[in-house]
Amino acid sequence: MTLLRPNIAAMDAYIPGYQPHDINSWIKLNTNENSYPPSPNVVAAILAELGSDGKRLHTYPSASSQQLREAAGELYGFDSSWIIMANGSDEVLNNLIRASVSEGEEIGYVHPSYSYYATLAAIQGAQVRTYGLTGDFRIADFPDRYQGKIFFLTTPNAPLGPAFPITYIEELAQRCSGMLVLDETYADFADGNALELVRKHKNVVITRSLSKSYALAGMRLGLAIAHPEIIAALDKIRDHYNLDRLAQAACLAALKDQAYLREICRSICKTRDWFYAQLQRIGYAAIPSQGNYLFVTPPDRNGKRVYEALYERKILVRHFSDPQLAHGLRISIGTKEEMTATVSALAEIG
Ligand SMILES: *Cc1c(COP(=O)(O)O)cnc(C)c1O
Image (cartoon, rainbow, N blue to C red; front, side, top):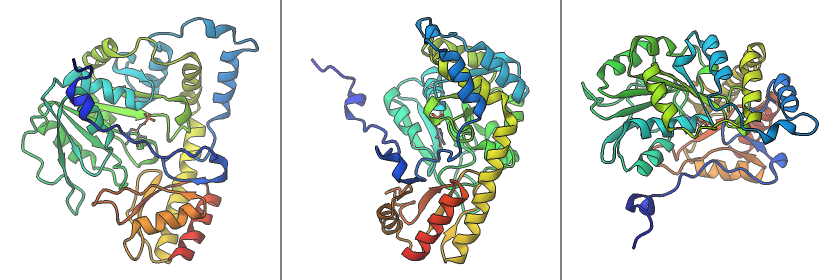
C-alpha cells in the first residue's frame, strides 16, 4: 500500500533562504530580514509575558488572538471581523489555498515572484499557471477573465522590487473570477498599498507580514485582511492555537509602536536609495525598488560569479538559478555600515 498521496511523494520541498549556523560572522543580506532590532517594547512585552518563573506558559494562549485583531483593525481602519492573525504570512497563504482551491483546480501568479505559492498548490494538488511581466511592469497576456480560483500578486514584487499601481490592481480584481490575493509583505517600505480595494471588492485579500518591516522574522507573525466571510472560513481551517503566547505579546507591542516602525523603515529606504546610487557609480545596474531589497545586475551579467565572490568575503546575498534571474542577485538592504561594506566588496569584485 502506498503511504503517501502521489502529489506529495512526487513534489519538491520549498527551499528557504540559507541560514548559516555562525550567523554573526556574516553580513546577511539573503532573506530580506531587517538588520535593525525590533521595537524595545517588543522585548519588554515578551519578558513580561514570560515573567520570572514562566508561570503563564502552562496555559494555552488566546485561540482567536482577538486583541491583536483589534489592534490591527484599528491600525488599518477595519473592524476586527476583517482581520485574521497568522503564524507568519506563509500560514495564511497556505490556508487561503486550502479554503478556496479543490484538487485539480488552478491558481496563478506572476513569475518571477514568490515561488512558495507553487509549493502550496502542489500540496493541495492544484494546477499552477504563471504569467510573465511586460517591459512596463504589467502582467503579460493576462486574460480578460482569469478563471483560476486564486491569483497571487506580490506587490511590491519580490525579488524585482517595483509595486503595481493601484488602478491596475483594481482592474485585475475585476478580471479575476476567484480571489485576488495581494501579498503585501513589503508594503511598509512602499509609497502606497491596496487596503482600499479590500473594502471595495469582496474577492480581494491582503496578506501582511511582521517578519521584514517589524524585524520579527524569528517570531513568525503575519495577518490577512479580507471580507468577514473569507476570514470566517480561514478561522475554521487554521490551527486553533496558531500564535503562541510570546508571539501574541510581541505582536501587540510591535503593532502599537508605529513610530518605531516608521523610523526603521525610513532609514532602510534611505540606505536603499543611497545603495542604488552607489551601484550605478560602480557600473552595476539595479531596478528601482519599493521593498527592502534591490535586484542587482553586474556588468558581465554573471550573478553566480558575484554571489560566490561575496560569499568568500562573508557577505551572503540571494542568487536564483532560474534562467530569468540568474544574471543578477537580490540584495537585502541592511544598515548603512553593512551596505558600505557591500559596495566596497562589489567594487573590488567588479
Ligand atoms: C518573506 C515573504 C513571505 C513570508 O513571510 P512570513 O510572514 O515570514 O511567513 C511571504 N511573501 C513574500 C513575498 C515574502 O518575501
